[in-house]
Picture (tube, rainbow, N blue to C red):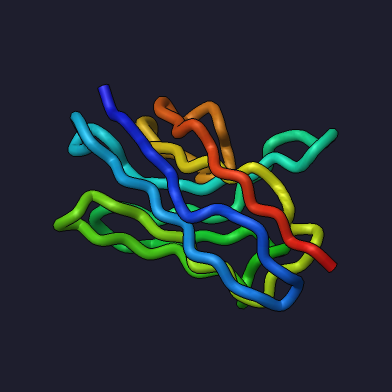
Length: 124
């Protein structure tokens, strides 16, 4: 089992920044990568970013490229999502997830563990 706890969400004005954290515990060695997803009101959950634990490869949704950065602290088993130049369209519940099967990072079916989510609200 892997436990994921997100933190760092909140309310920010457009153009501002937030940093989300996801602390992982348990059998983290059984996971390939960590990802961030988000779900806006009335919309389906969508991929945001992914980072491999070992190789360090990163992937981003087109909508966040150049604004968001995913990073990891192996010693702390923690993954971060630095979000800059935030827009009202970024408003959503953000979830971190552990990828337990190799494959396309955007495929949510590959993620076996999910956090509880943290709310990010960007005001205009």
